[in-house]
Image (tube, rainbow, N blue to C red; front, side, top):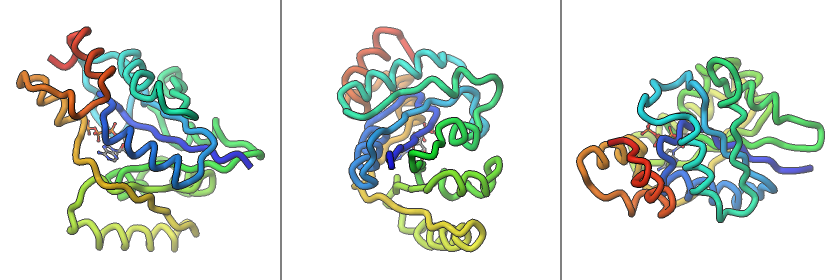
Length: 200
Ligand code: ATP
């Protein structure tokens, strides 16, 4: 059985938190391969008008260039209309493999309201990673996991990593304010953003 990970997001831009989470996911779920999939038109979020899909994809390629086993895929970008996770899972599913889906806490908590959650739970093992040290979320997380287990018969697994408190929003804000972002994104991504004048 091939162990295949899936990590989707807007990635506008991809940052150190994403890369750290992806690496921990690969190690802790013993993945053979990890698909990093930037969204096309995202159903969860308003798109950032200034940066093209191709640029978000390119930044992911740069960020993961050195991470063995990662495939950066444009499959959601090539799809017409909104990207739904369930469609991506259907496309990647196969008899020879087991799928694992990585989610940040924020995404994990809303999973039940995505398109066709029952099918999502059938197709993959959801895995979450904490993205904040906020203790206030602990109870909510435990409750949600119990709820999903009861409804869909699967336990959402957790990977453990030191939470890196960074978001793409914070990076876009820093750039607009003229602040450096070198410590928040991989060096090649910082260079690409600078060369192309993104998020100004
Ligand atoms: P934005 O600030 O624009 O909302 P973001 O930083 O949340 O962006 P996304 O591209 O929306 O980035 O995130 C993709 C996935 O990565 C989501 O599942 C999200 O929860 C997770 N994620 C984002 N930041 C981190 C982080 N610092 N550590 C772990 N997971 C993260």
